[in-house]
Length: 330
Length: 203
Image (cartoon, rainbow over all chains, first blue to last red; front, side, top):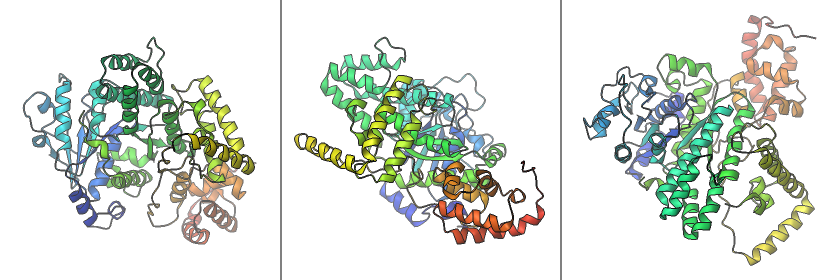
C-alpha cells in the first residue's frame, strides 16, 4: 500500500476488513439532485474511487440511461455489457454485467452505450435491479441517477434511506433539488400509506399546482391527519426515516459553503425533513482537467482542492456507515 | 414536525437548549440570511410572506436567547409548560452546527505539507469565514488576505508585514500562528524573488 494521501486519509486495511465482516450487504447510496450538470456523475465517480482507494470494494452503477457516461469518468472507454442487457432481458443477473475499471476495488455497472432506442426499465425491472444491487458482494454501491423527477429516476433514490442530493449555488439547481426531494419523499409516502384516500391525496400533492394548495410535505401532513390520524402517524414515521444528505458542489465562497446549512433549514422548516449536510466540493480546475482526462480527480490529482474535499465526504460516508432503515424494500 | 407558530425559540433557531451564546449568535445569523429577502437557499420554496414571518420569529427568539436574564426566565416558563406535557424527545445529535465552522464533524483531514495559500483557503472555507469577517477580527485588509491565499506575494507589503498578517490570519482560523507563519514564509522566501508585481495596486 503506497502512502498516498487518499489511502492515508482513510482507515484502510484491517478496519475495512472489520467493516466488511460486520455487514453482509453493501451500503447503497443513490446520488441525485434533479438538475443535470450539477456534478452527480463526477461525484459518484470520485466518491467511488476514493472509497475504493481506501480499500473498500465498491460498485458504481449508472442509472442515468439518457446521459450515461459514468464509465467514461472512471476511464472505461467501452464497457461492453451494460444495464441495457438487463432491461432488454438478455440477462437476469446484474453480477454478470459488472465491469472492472482501471481503479483497483472499483467495478461499474454501465448504462447503455450508443443505444438510442433503449426503453426505460419498467417499474418491476427497477425493483428487481435495486434488489440485486443491494445484494451485491461489495461494501458500497453508489447509484448515479439521471436528471428530473420522473419515477424512472426517483425510484432509484429509494435504494437507500440516505441518498445524496447534489446542489450547486444557483437558483436553478435549488429549484430542481427541492422538486426532487419532494418527489422522492412523496413517492416513498405513496408506498407507505395504506388508505386509498390518503394515497389519492398524496398523488394530488405530487402536482405542484394542485387545487388544494398543498405546497410542502407539511401542508400534506395536515391534510392526511385530517383524513386519518393513524395514517398521519405513519406519515411522520416515513418523514423521520427519510434522511437525505446534501453535498454542495462548485462552492467558491464561504457563502456557498453555508448554503448547505441553509438548505437544511429550509428542508426542516418547510418540508419537515431532516437533511444532513455531508460536505462540499469547491470549484477547482483540477476537477475539469480530470473529466477531460477521463480519470477521477482523487486518483489523478489527489492533492488538489477538489480531491481533498471529496475524500472528506467519502470519509464521512464510511463513518456514517449503513443506515438502519436501508432494509426496507421499495 | 411543528408549524412555525408552535415552535419555541430554540426550535425556531434550530439549536439545542444548552446552546452557548456563540452558537445562538451563529444560528441567528444563519437563519436570518437563509430567509433574507433574496436568499438563494429558499428559492422556489420560501415565499416572501413566509420569509418575513420567519425573520420576525427569529428576531424575537434571538432577543430573548441572547439576553441572559430574559433567557433564564424563558427557560423557566418552558420548564413549567413541560411539566404538564410529556417530555420532548432528546435533541438529535448535531453532526454539524449551523453556521459554524463546518459540515466537518470529524477531525480535520490534515493533508500535511506546507501551509500554502490553498491550504489556508481550505481552512477558512471549512470554518465558513469570508474575508470581511476575518478582516474585522484581524484588522488586515481583506484584499491582502486574498493575495495571501493566491500567493500573490508581489502585491503584498514588505515581508515583515506579510508574516504578521499570516500569523493574525492563522490565529483567527484557530491554527498555530508560529507554525503556519514559518511554513508560509518558507514558500514566500523561495518564490518572492521570482514574482513581479502583476497588477498595479491602485491608489
